[in-house]
Length: 325
Image (cartoon, rainbow, N blue to C red; front, top):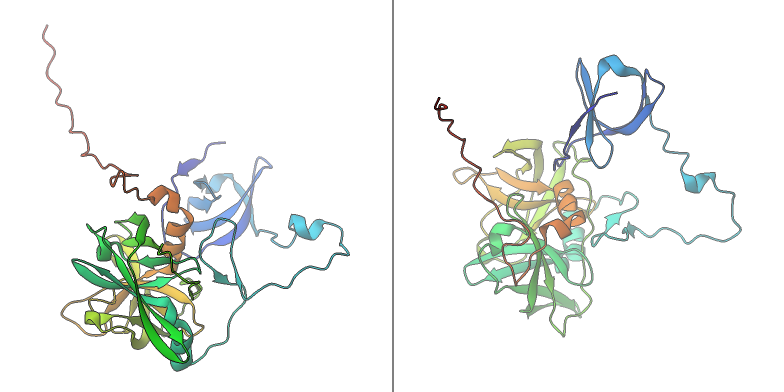
């Protein structure tokens, strides 16, 4: 049985369904169907993608996700703790909502989430960012910190109903990906408190026309809130898919969060059409999750700034000289 294996690629915003594919040789493959064509089916099995010829497929059925090992165990008398509104995995440094939160007004959400949105400053640029856990890890765009190592973070803490600006200057670059325009930073000041943070949602679950809003520092005007709708989920630019929104995005918004009305981050704002209005773009949060889940592959080292990648020029095509007889 021969299948074509494809290396798994980063692809934010592709809806895939879990299924079990019964083959004619009585074996089966379980995974997420990425695409179905007349002569083949592409299936993501976790560590690679299989392309299965249609001629070898007997039947396709939905995977039974209810018969998990935990559910097959005998019931225990031990009481289980209730699930919290947010949940994390052992390796995750961000939180996701475990159940759908109710929609609220932008005014309510800004008061709740605004403290987690920060201003990112370097000697050569200014952008935005947002804190993803209480330890001070935060996300921004790669182009905000590109070529810089002296980074400061402006946080607006709420104290007694008032906003108090605090500047943190011990900031470490944890990981970055130039091609995805993402960077993970960490505040490491000795007097840093426990930080307020924001949860991640799903860009896959968004609908075109859904209301979204951004918080950032356009042109240095910190804590600016802009609102709009999602124009499209799959705007292709330079080989990548982006969320397009009518939410006003300007220089300084880069690296800031795009929220839905459930208070979840659904994208990272990073660019706009220069000679147009209401044409802003954001990196889908699914791509951000991929970056964070594989952050060790994008780790940054002060001792070796080229780590982990060293990109070389492709080898030139060899010129064959005729053999001399």
